[in-house]
Image 1 (spheres, rainbow, N blue to C red):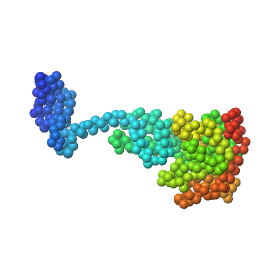
Image 2 (cartoon, helix red, strand yellow):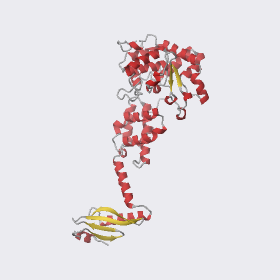
Image 3 (cartoon, rainbow, N blue to C red):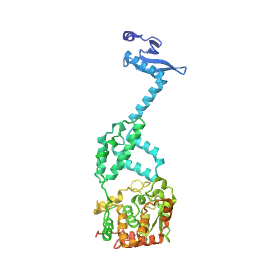
Amino acid sequence: MLTDVQIRKAKPSEKPYRLPDGGGLHLFITAAGGKLWRMRYEVAGKEKLLSFGPYPDVTLAEARERRDESRRMLRQGIDPSMAKKKAKLLQARSAVATFEGIAREWHAQNEKSWTPTHAGDVIRSLERDVFPTIGATPIREIDAAGVLGLLRAIEARQAIETARRLRQRMSAVFVFAIASGRAEADPAAIVQNALAPLKKGRQPAVTDLEKAREVLRAADATPAHPATKLALRILALTAVRPGALITTPWAEFDAIEASDPLWRIPAERMKLRLHMKDDEARDHLAPMSRQAMEAIAELRRITGRGPLAFPNTRHSHRPMSGNAIGYLLNRAGYHHRHVPHGWRATFSTIMNERFPADRAVIDFMLAHVPGNKVEAAYNRSAHLARRKELAQIWADLLMVDQLPAEELFSRPRKSA
């Protein structure tokens, strides 16, 4: 058994040598005078060597503690050298485990179980609202106060639902990090009850025809990207869901026949359960009015060279931000009065009042989810002739005293 006195007095020689302490532990004396703690042991009949560090940084007592721990691991069938390497690897991973790095890993693991549209929406929302603030921060250093501050900034934009959705996605990232040994807590779960409550009821929408016309006129007079203005016009004319509109590839608009203008929106892009999105019977057929086709023709002049009808102004391979149309309405004076999704309520209210006998047809036009596959196949083509008539009637009603699409950007327009 070694003593501290022996270790301090040990001198280097021409060749390295060892001073044994017992149980495989020894002090290795280098020719230059270095003193290193090492332990010899066997695994499956093969001799191995484990280093504990230099003396006096590692004292004799500490070296013996590490030897005893290593021997306990051997009795449990664990190779202490491999356990040490694994611990170093985990420590290194933890040191560089930023929120963005882990979030992208989580996204890559889950995107195969999501629709392409949802997968794109998830990563874009994180890139837009989360990564710029905490993306480069090691995930272990993020606390509830940091998460809440980030979400409060989103709530300040009146994007209450977006803040809640992002909290859920951030929580999933933290849970993924915990499961893979790179975090111990989920601060996004802690702040759940501190978020602003969602307002109950329908989204704001004007339901008077003349007021609906005023919305379009006010938006036309408000500075905005031409594609955003045309998106608002086509949204109002078709009453499709905003998410389905802004992700439209040009291939879908190109497939609309001039002699029979029907826009086929694939089920995979509709608001449906995942198992329904591969069912062609659930494709939505949206009759296109003359005014809608004119707006698409004008849009082609602006964005027709790319794959997307409504591309992001910064990244042409990505769709327009889901907030772009809403911000246009806000600037036009309709904050909390009319939102993009509100056009569906506008269309439904006005058309049902005028054509109460067509209530079921109007419901089909809004693509409300059918109960079963047989009903879905029927609904897709049911009353198609009447749906085409109603689509044109709606456009003729809404577009009274509106500029034609081809004149929309040729001269200034005063709001009513």
